[in-house]
Amino acid sequence: MSSIEEFIAGLPKAELHVHLEGSVEPETLLELARRHRSPLADGGGERVRELYATRDFGAFLQAFRAVCELLQTPEDYEFITYKALSRLAQQNVRYAEVTLAAGVVLWKGENLLNSFSGMEAGARRAQEDFGIRVKWIFDTVRQFGLESAEGVLREAVRLQDRGVVGLGIGGDEQRGAPELFRAVFDDARKQGLRLTAHAGETAGPVSVWGALDALGAERISHGFTAARDPRLVAHLAARQIPVDICLTSNVRTGCLPELATHPVRRYFNQGLLLSLNTDDPALFETYLNREYRLAHEVFGFSREELTRLAEASFRAAFLTPEEKESYLAAFRSPEGS
Image (tube, rainbow, N blue to C red; front, side):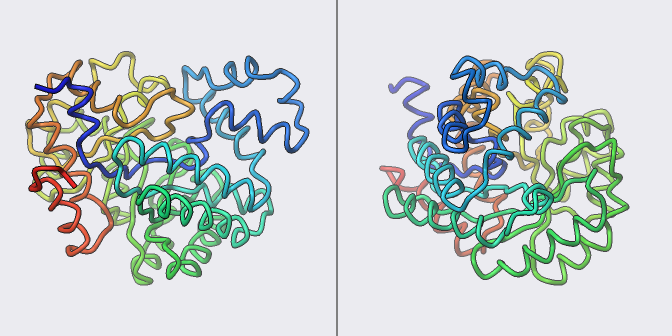
């Protein structure tokens, strides 16, 4: 019998909650810092590793902001996109929905179309070299307010025919109630975009209810505080509303005191549709196959249950039924291909 590492490596997988900026490895950030003659480069690799050693949500946001500041040209975006997708492909990730902090790009005053063109170029190269496919989710930032969200929506609609599949909302849950963004998400739905929301990470179950009721979110990112509300958990299970599980992230941001307290096992047993994800793999020093191993080692997921999680990652994706079936067919193939 193969080892658990070999078994996980062989599973076809989708990653649905991964931020492009949070996928920039320390050595890549250092190269960008040198390219743009940033003071960060003066500290070398040690300074970058210190920046990435996040243990609470504030430190995470600071590191994320530092990465964003060094993404300045289409070539930068092509560089990080290719590297991020190549790492995913090495883990047998066949399809990814990658989130861009579009609200931050606009806040910086960048031409988002130029940045996106770089991302497209990196994604094309990765697909040619590794076969991995990608679609994009443009993320708004709660604390940037309504006008910023409207700007992100305009850009998402503009680039919809170039692979932008969804609109999301992130940032500090405490500083932007979902109800403030109802009209933006209503408009996005009418324009044919799929909807997702970070909720139940730094705020309680009311944030998840708001994402569902006010925003019409089709998928919930994180959602671990939903466990405090049995009615909400039952609702998520009955409606099969997908929840993106990010185990390491929730500990590294300080949102969970320790990994063992995560409700992933309870959610799975109660029939929720779950996918495992990394969120910001470089910042949190993790990778998708490691998240599957943690599910096995910490929460006792069997090989059959890990396979069900991998299948669920495609079922929860913003793909057509035909596209989902084409990926799920790999699980019925003896070679898994």
